[in-house]
Length: 170
Image 1 (cartoon, rainbow, N blue to C red):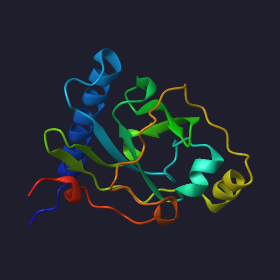
Image 2: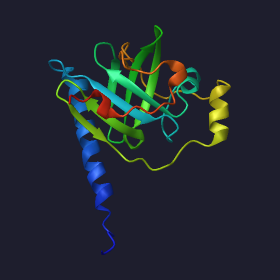
Image 3: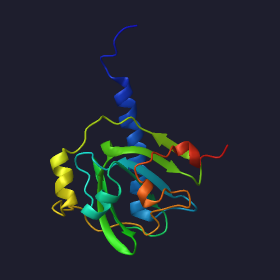
Image 4: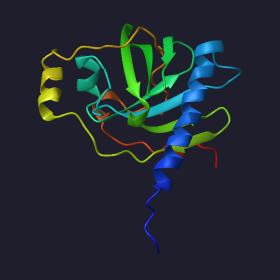
């Protein structure tokens, strides 16, 4: 089989990330219509991800957020989105590059996407700084209070990978 020098796999993933970007832009502009809501899983160590040290310590590898009833200041850019969510009644600013997104699900219509991520993570030095409270957030405020669904893992199970297939109707 000939070598794919065009990298159609990456081109397809970038096109599908455009679907996520456009869905978030709709939510940012007009709000979420009907029963639509989003589960977004992402790599917390990916370069450009900005989380508070507290949240990064709780979710050291992967995190799934839910945009449904309570989120604020959703700003969508070409390469990332920013949102403010509430964790234990404390507002937190998140900046998430689209390249860090591993999965997107809208359970209202059983639409989901999974992405392969390049294994690019923050250096251990950066993670140590975050644990010591030295990592600063650069996001604008925006977020959601409902960051967990009944099926979400407990904080001590945060590193457990949950397949988006779990949320699909059979």
